[in-house]
Length: 106
Image 1: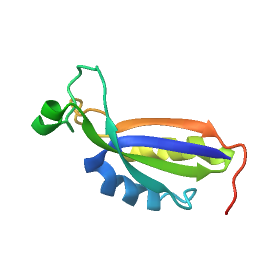
Image 2: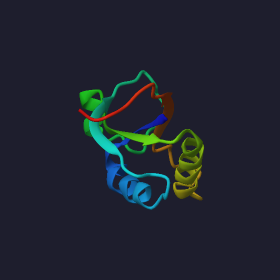
Image 3: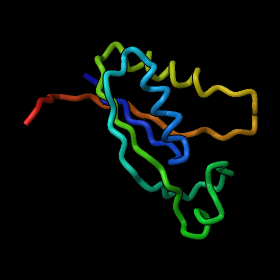
């Protein structure tokens, strides 16, 4: 099993959740609020004046548990669904995949 984690702008939460619900390999996901802190100076279209003053950007973390063979498929489906013709649009977030050694219910 794999855990696909996405860290995206909080403003993209609803759109991302809708897209995930339409990907067959995704049976469910968890969304948690988080904050993005960085020394990166690149322009971020999701960063408001408030974010620049306070020093962090509101984000959400999405964790999706997947079969090993489905992780790349889901990543590619998300990349395709967020493609845009606007070359100036910044990325909506980052992703990473981790191994799950064991899981269950308590």
